[in-house]
Image 1 (tube, rainbow, N blue to C red):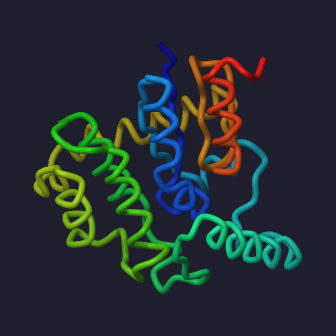
Image 2: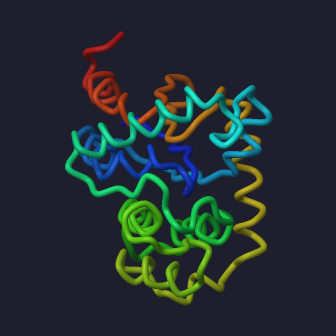
Length: 200
């Protein structure tokens, strides 16, 4: 059985556009998943990336076009310039880490609820109320938002270090069994083929 380390940022629109396709692929192949939210700005700094606001205008314009096209392709609503972006990703990331540790709900659904709140619902995912709502929607106790903050912060920092060590440089990023890497929501089909033994 394959194991997938799923590295992502709760600020990432491309992670939002993955929808539930990744979870469907993992379930199809019986793969286990560890969700590893991380600080994407620090990841960029460590791996040669550039935050969107600092990119050349041509790259910024293309990014918006690609987001629009991918959202249309997958039938997902998106606000290309959300009111509360960028925001502090740490609180939502801590909640995901704590929820995964606590169990009792659907972590994939939690991640999607948080991303949808930012990119489709004009909500601030740094808000305690928004995080609690997402936790409840995914079947978790909303009180998780206030639990284990220190350990979650330590795990959040460790996720960044692991990402750098494992060759991760963007979001979403899927690492199968510690070696095979897939970057981007547009590589989920390749991930599916690989897990099915059809990509060497």
